[in-house]
Length: 177
Image (cartoon, rainbow, N blue to C red):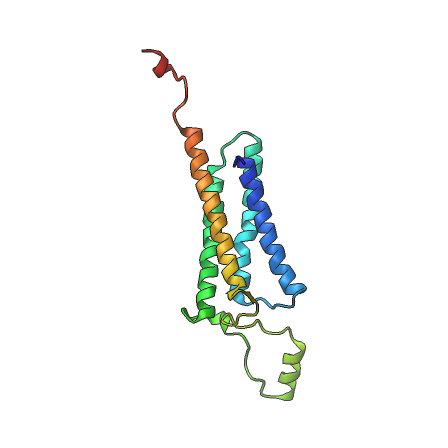
């Protein structure tokens, strides 16, 4: 399999769409309410879709989208770092953000209770694992997924850039002597 710029662009787009689809399906079909860190992990994927489309267009026009691949790889790495932090909050290694506390204030009147019950439910706390498989939470799987995609994108971008800018065969200097 050849990792062409068009292939890597398509991979970044497809992988990001897949991650967002999995998150939305788990939320709307699986009934898993996202915590603030879950929502934060979705943002890099959304940006990567647009950068991947730009890289695909650039590659289609014969340009080397190495800068876009570097940005895409950095965003995958950022997502992996956010997911690592989320796993750390789930495991008690790190303290969560203020928004991660979940819940809310205790109502002090019947009207306040009625408003609370009719309102949207509060986001769950970030330290509560709602789903896991083989002892790994969704944040853990996202961390592994994003880290792998970061490595693929960054390694490919560096390799492709060095091939594109490397020594040229049959250059005039080599043939002049």
